Amino acid sequence: FVNFDLDSVEGVQRAVQGGLVSKELADVVLVPDVRLGSLLFGNGQDHIHADNEEISGTEYKGVMFVLFRDPLDRTLSFFYHKQQDNESVHYDPSMEIYSLVDWVNSPSYITNFMTRTLVGKMDNQIPLTAVDLDVAKEILRRKCVVGLLDEKAESMKRFARLFGWDADVNHDSLSLLQGEAAASRAKAERWKSQIVNDEECEDKLLHINWLNKHRHPALREGSVEYKVVKSKNSFDLELYYYAKQLFEEQYTQLGFDEDDI
Image 1 (cartoon, rainbow, N blue to C red):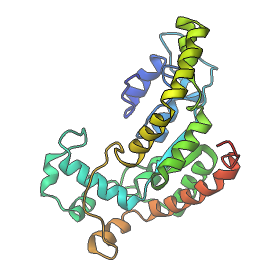
Image 2 (image 1 turned 30 degrees about the vertical axis):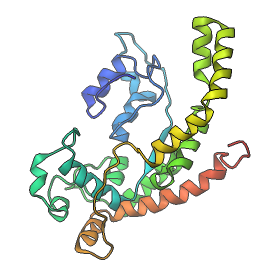
Image 3 (image 1 turned 120 degrees about the vertical axis):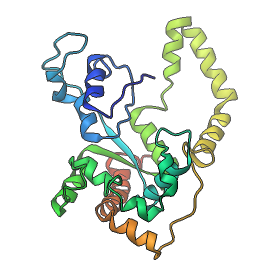
């Protein structure tokens, strides 16, 4: 993997100058801000040089994909993550004195985070409107392959199918290094001895050892905490329900209903 800070304009510029996309240094790019990450692709690169070489007129296209999570669960989980996980970059010792309601009502909490990210209104002082929600929905419909955290296995299967992650890329690499015969033998051995292990490993990763899995109390519906968090994420809730609708529609629209999936 390669490591660029894509959480700032300067970091994105460094990634472009280093040829992150133009040199195909990575197959998957993780970005905290969709609009900022979009500068890596398309006409956004026309005004940035890669290794001091002019790349004006070159267009690169990415495909956005996301695992959506219920925004109330997301808020609760992130709160305990910041408060308790001292090995995380998000850990904040000052959070120990905060309750969930305190934090959600504080200036540091970004309301309707997903909607704001998509429409570029990250400042809480800028109110969101119904038009913003419609724009966010349209971005998802036109540009995003939707996955759901509650449907991790199905979502990952779709991503693997769409992006070719199931393809035996190691075969081509090994063929170049050691020859076709060696690559074919390695492939046959893998299928013979590891296919079950691979499936077991995937199941454990998705359902048992899910990355950043953190146990914490649940948010009780109807409680004060539930009502406050919900009121701060009304647009994100609507967007989440729409994402669930897209998840169902894309099953046929993107060909995931074919027999060999």
